[in-house]
Image (cartoon, rainbow, N blue to C red; front, side):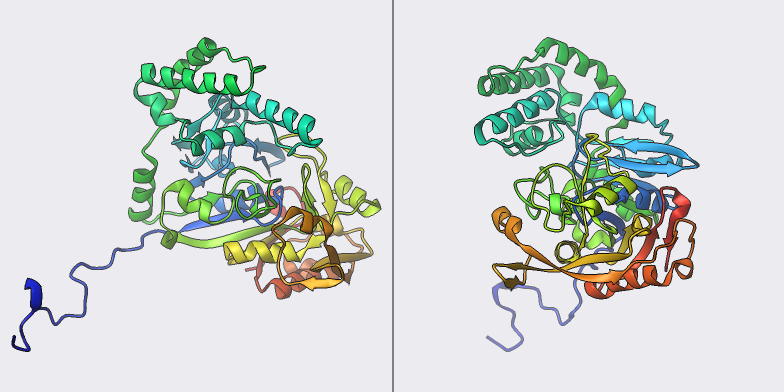
Length: 444
């Protein structure tokens, strides 16, 4: 064979360029994620960014999330809809990774007088809420403790999804006779597992049939819709994460977690989009730490500090009405959340709650049996036993709620922000000093 011959009939080419040009990446999405155990103030950050957005997306979770936004002294509470829908020019898109109770969806849209458009492709659940309550009761009876779920049916519906017996909105929109048969099978499966469970199958199906015509105008093929948004004309696309990193089903404080991926990977799987289209990833961090329900909480304060933070911060869950447990800012877990999500900048919220403290502690490392550990423990028993090493910073003993620029903050408040930035290696872009939209200080 001559040196110029090409074996196996392959075409000869001297070009080093691909025959087809590399695909254009298209628009990138901006992502807002919680960096702690939720309730960090993500809704407020999304509300700010949504002023310039064309599309605002929810990618995971369900109505177990709760976001509160205050605009012009009016308070809006969101559980299912992206909070950015307050902007009437925005299109709200609820992705494939979200589970939705249809009555709750319409009730929320009506209650908040939402003017935005909704492009919805969701998984549906109905009687799962009752199952959630029965499961929690069984855990309490059998193990002496439950998980502290919101009893919104999130766990059971994600379980049904994993077991491949769940029902989706596309099933409801397709053939209602077939949908009804599958619904009856699913209901009977749950009744076999939980004999005390009462399900009005005919009543539930009647309500679902009524929703078909209401929902149909809002349903789109999610992958096709997102692809068009990413690769069409330039658009500002915002993704609002629900829950938070430490509640992630894979990376959170398992088993006291939610049932979905609240970290950045959930954006891709929940919306059906590639990672190359993820742009800025903003982590939202409360200036102290809170947690709803049970589970390990290393920096929790069972004292006057915890009480003060709970009272001043009005720390009550939007979804459950439960008091939130409170403690010092824990940079070990924030650093862990950053390892997973790759935050490009942070929003530090509720700084004003710390205004009255003479000194402020910040958790910087963990030790077990007197030895420092380099990582955030995956095992709950180990996490329960860690001792937190704190740095103590001076407080500022003055009101920050009227500050509108970084320079207007007291010197020690500025130092607190810079300390966090330097410890994490991530810049703080916004600082929250109150409930209103105007009380978010933008640094850059």
